[in-house]
Amino acid sequence: MNKLEIARQQINEADREIAKYFEKRMKASQMVAEYKLENMMPIFDPKREAQVIENNKAFIDDPEIRSFYALFQQNVMDVSKMYQRRLVEGMRVAYSGVEGAYAHIAAKLIFPDANHVPYGSFEEAYEAAVNGESDCVVLPIENSTAGEVGGNMDMIYAGPLTINGMYELKITHNLLAKKGTAISEIKTVCSHVQAIQQCYEYIKRNGFATQNVVNTAVAAKMVAESGDRTIAAIASRETAKLYGLEIIAEAINESTINTTRFAVLSRADTASGDNKLFTLGFTVNHEAGALAKVIKIIAKYDFNMHLIKSRPLKDELWRYYFFTEIEGNLNSEAGRKLLEGLKEVCINVRVIGAYGDHTTLEE
Image 1 (cartoon, rainbow, N blue to C red):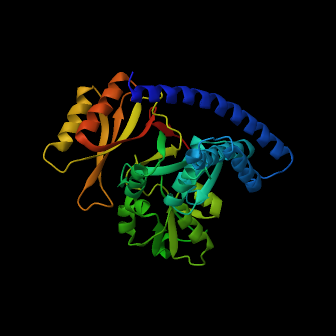
Image 2: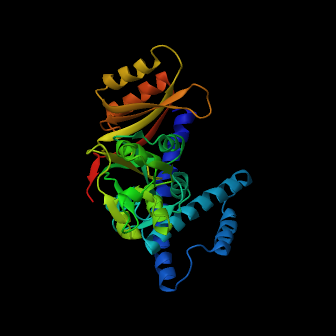
C-alpha cells in the first residue's frame, strides 16, 4: 500500500467517525432549538459561538492546523443554525417576485407547507439558498413558447447549488385592469418580458404599447396601485384576486400548451441517489468534432439526452458551455464510466443535479 492509499484509508476512517459525532451533535442542536423556541430565544448567539470556537481550538495540538479547525468549527455551527432555523421556523423556500407571481404559485404547489420567501430578483433568491437564509430556491429555467431563461441557466451553471427536482406549470396569461375598465381605455400593457413575448399576437392585434417589469405579479401590483386606467397587466388569475383587479380578457397567450419549467435548487447533492434524470454542464475545446465526441460517449454508455443547449461563457469571448439533461441513473456503473469518459474529452464537466421524472403541477 503506497502513501496515497494509506492517507485515503485514514481519511475514510476519520470521515466515518466525524459522521457519527456529527449526527450526535445535530441531535443536541435539535434539543437547543426546542429550548430556544420554548423560551423565545434567538437562534444566533454570537458570543456563545465565539466562546465555543476559542475553547475548542485548544483541543488541536498542531498549531499549523489550529486556525483551519476554527474554520471547520464555524462551518459546523453554520449548518447547526440552518437546522435549528428549519426546526423553529419551518422550511424556507425562496422565489423571485411578489405574492401571486408564477414562481410563487409553483413554490406553493411544490412545497405547500413551507414558508415562501419573496426576493427582488432571481439572483437574490438564488443567493438566499447559497448562504442558508432559505433551504432551497424555485427558479424558472425554460418556457415552451419563449424559450430558456438564459440568465438563470448561467447562474445555475456557475453557482454552487444543485438541481433536486424539475417541475412543469401550465401558464395561462390574463389581461388585468382596474375594475370597470373597458378594453378600449387600455393603451399600455406591462408584464415580464417573457409574458409579453408569449402574448405578442394579442398585444399586436389590439395595438397596445408594452412596458417590461421584473415579473407578472409586480405588474399586477403596479396596476392596482396606479390611478391610471390606461394601463393593464398580463398576469395570473391569482394576482387578480390578490390585488383586486378585474380580468378583462382570459387566456391571451397564443399557445394553449404554454408551460414553464421550474427547477428546485439547494445545497443538497442528490447525485448519489437512484434517480432517473441528471443534468450536466460542460465545456469543450474549440475544435472540429469536440461536441461530437461528447455525444458519442453519452451514446456509448446507453444514455439518452433529453435536451442540449449552448450558452456563451461570460468571461471568455466567443466560447460556450453546454447544458444537457440526460435520462438514466448517474450513480450506476455506466454513470461513473460516462463521467470518466467525458472528463477525458471536456475541459470541465459539472454534475448540476440528479432527480426523478419531471412533475406536472396543477393549480
